[in-house]
Image 1 (cartoon, rainbow, N blue to C red):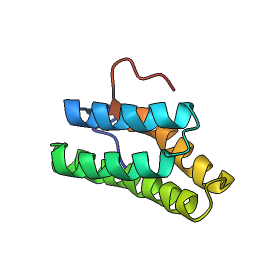
Image 2 (image 1 turned 60 degrees about the vertical axis):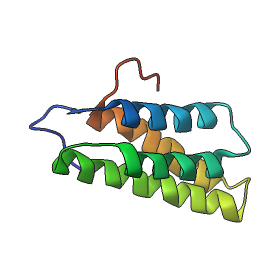
Image 3 (image 1 turned 30 degrees about the vertical axis):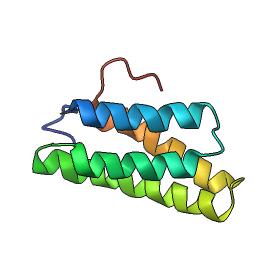
Length: 103
């Protein structure tokens, strides 16, 4: 994952919407976090339009989100799954400029 010449990547509406939905579900400790994460990563892949380098960076975050969702699907109380999703959500604003994002 890389920055855009030392700056965070611009986001589009689809990216902001999908990531905010995952963030909200994680904040609420939603029992459907794994399902929400999968649905929203599918939404990001289908709708988010970023330049290739930004897209590659996003895919690093998506991979972490999906790994966390996998762990939660196997064990809904998985601390590792929740931590993996939270870590991805913490990294997201390090690489992407999402106005109003609350860590």
